[in-house]
Length: 560
Image 1 (tube, one colour):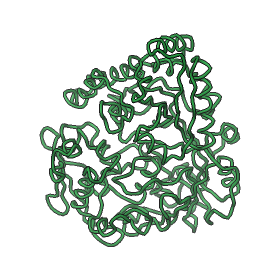
Image 2: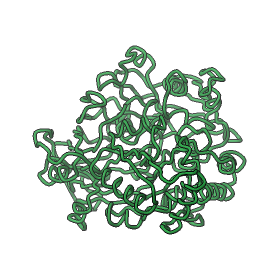
Image 3: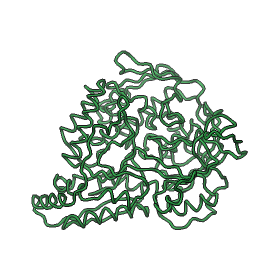
């Protein structure tokens, strides 16, 4: 899923008046009343309310139109799907589903019973028909969802044909056998289906409510319904720089939700975020990218730091004839000193990446995908220059100008300036013009392929390498580079189909595909795998971080 630079950012000062008045934070909790997860006894605070900082505005809260991590994070607080991740962020557990799916013999048909005590915030029951409606709405070409077709294509029966206008929406492989029984038909067995169904694209929607709102649906908090642990009580729409979540008493598991209120504010300057944290006005910061700030908190119990499975790269738009040239692409990939990038520019624990599928993310028989996979496109400035000159000769050019699109945050600008400097100093005749834009516009520019180079990130949607590898299939819904290689396509398609039930061979096919994508084709320029650094008030326990939607506040508790 598309990543924002949720770490970095714009202003220099922060007026204290913008913050609401709670004080607490987050780290890790348990459900017992008297103990924190660190084993110490503790009493719950009377006021179960926290202040959280984010570094970007919410682009949308229509679950079938969402395509970014922040949207998923908020959607997963206020909505509930069939399944969700548990407090560890690793295990799939039932949510609206009563239990795990029942399968037919070849595991292509799932039958899922729904719990009968799940309700929408208006009192309506959550039924199987709500899932059917949402899935059909998401895949309907008239909806023009930027993400649902990508999530369903080659997975849910007839999704591909419907998205291409070749089959009716009603033929999608989901049906309500009764109000509380769903049947899902797959194109083929999916080893990651349980994980996939936790994703926001598969959430239900209340047809009566959505259609009654018309074009105003999801416009703001008052034009949404909720069936999750929390509900939005304040959100004025996509330009809003603050929003409020409150406990949803109609959630089926409301008894296990302790937190009463979460106040979110957008703060784009990391120093301002730290100032708010240290003065008690914020309990959880957004991601911190400043090495100077992070170093001040090293060893502190307030600093939460972990390597996440999100990847950052430069996308190369092959609609530009220059970028069709493989020597030009390889030159760009070899010209950037990633070690200097992560150590001196980021300096936040992130790791240089010469790969696409992240480490410590996907496993087969306990073995990390990266074990046995290669590393590619390692920095080699001398070779980069040779390939560049060869590419220029093949193109009949002596100079080239590229437009590089990045985000408008201060740290993002710093990163992009480093990339520009590395490329221009290594590759004679190259000029890189940077265009720094807000996150929402960057997504739009990517979707429309309105760029030459694009600094972008991707986080997984489910626990399998395929969530990265199918991005670059020819004509894929998230390709947005016009990249195409039949050899790559075949390996990925084989992993989806004939090798789906052969885990070792499937793993090897995906590793071989990654080699083609990077070493052979240099289709894009991998940069780094991100380490997250946030500050959390030690009085707050139970914040769950996970690979797909970042955080869950469902188990958060505030202690005295």
